[in-house]
Length: 105
Image (cartoon, rainbow, N blue to C red; front, side, top):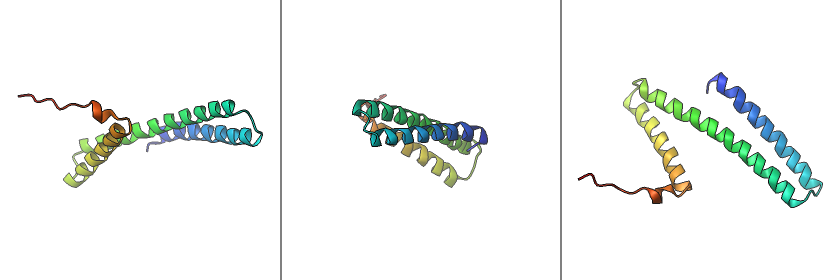
């Protein structure tokens, strides 16, 4: 991962970690559930944003590997990684049910 990507990712992770510690303190202080849930939702949003940043960086690395003309084994590994990511996303979000085979004949 490039240094210019690490700094904002670490910043977001530290922020989410601090927020999570605050939520832990809220639970220990018996803050009302709705407020704790709201704060947990914010932490989840921050972690989702970090996950998206890391995923985008990883996909870019896979494409760069494919573009540099490496060995067939390395290219296959990059393609397998991309396929695993996309398949996992499709299954997780039930999007595979929306994909329909189109016969071009």
